[in-house]
Length: 240
Image: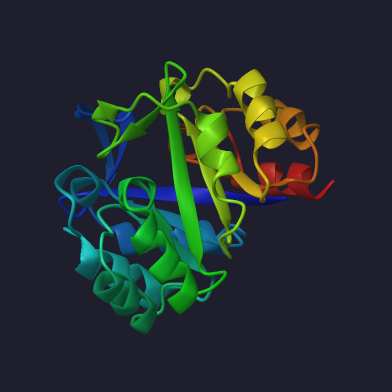
């Protein structure tokens, strides 16, 4: 199982939010490239970069910083946030991004998801973000009427790299993951999952590993920045 550090970008800064609230941010660095190099030096196998401005506004805002991160490290980089067209996907891949994460655009426009997967098979993640039992859209600002289970089931026919499943209420709270929600997601998903939201301690990684091999990775953010989780120790636990 992979442990994937998150780099969340807002106006070029490396920040973390509480439950995805853009008004509740903590800035950890004004140099995202240096942060990316730090996680690589500590053993990260890949990085998860989110354009927070893009997620809310529906178009990339921090693309130059994402490109710089990809150019500065030798490990694969995922990026999500505001990716709503094949042209943007192609641009990211042409600048060294390994995988892109589609959220709102994929869930609201299945034709776009179909086109993206046909053009770039096994290079697309779908982000399924859940709050109060409902799937959230538009940078987590809107709740849909759908629960995660039918959304996950609907992804069976697509040649995806996997699903990134986030429990928003735990994100940035340092309270531990919602293991029961993850268990339900594992049972509902026909494809591999990466878990995100609330992972705070090595014990959390151990608990997620018990859910089975369908979970291929965990994304960790605030716990790394606040020091409640040591990346080398997390990597060792994931490999155990």
